[in-house]
Length: 313
Image (cartoon, rainbow, N blue to C red):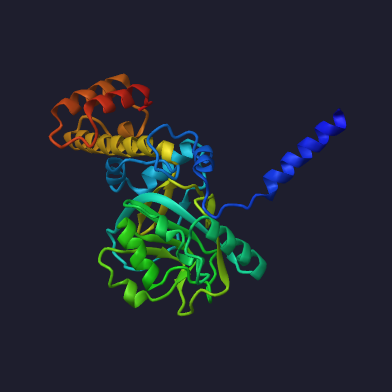
């Protein structure tokens, strides 16, 4: 009996591992990766962070987002030292990550990827895997590609792919690697790319291996559906289940600053007092100040009050 059970277990495991690895991650796998997300999802399983949150995220500074992520023990969510396709001091772009992983090409692996891509209904005829992830993009997606910082013959974005990214998502690309056709890419209105460099060669020694699996972008592990906050000085990748918290924290921090600076100018408190842990008196003063605040609150007052109940000023 034990021998029969052992053979059955061996057969089951052999069957599981004999199945080809998907190029595109399954919805079930993506849901498992992002299990802490409790909201709406796309058909591919990725968390659907709301457009409203992505728009509000644009106003959060890199430091505000990074500091709160550190408080939550997410220590590896920032990557700097980028080159921007279009330089602009005030440039900011947000979106939901679609990840693509590239590796040094080898013929046997490429054959397997092509065969699996064929089974998944991808454009395999010309054995050009570079565009497969791009075709999955929808409005609001950010193309995030791990090109393992390869330079020659590893340019994973060119003019055709850049146009495809923009037409599908109206967002840009983050490439931990190099791109080509920069003169043509700059002609795409509002398109931008965060890259490590440029090279005129086309991709021929690099192979796409997975779509929407975890990828490494420099010092960061990026999961599909992460919210991307990309600015001139760097990129923060925010786990989907933390986006609302990060946005609210940044927005409240800005309100704290406006209140504190006004009270310092009024001579009511010193800078040292404002920069220290607030007393109950200052907390009460802040809540009263909110009632007369002339600016537009980025969040609802209900959401703000709930946040303040949990926040240790």
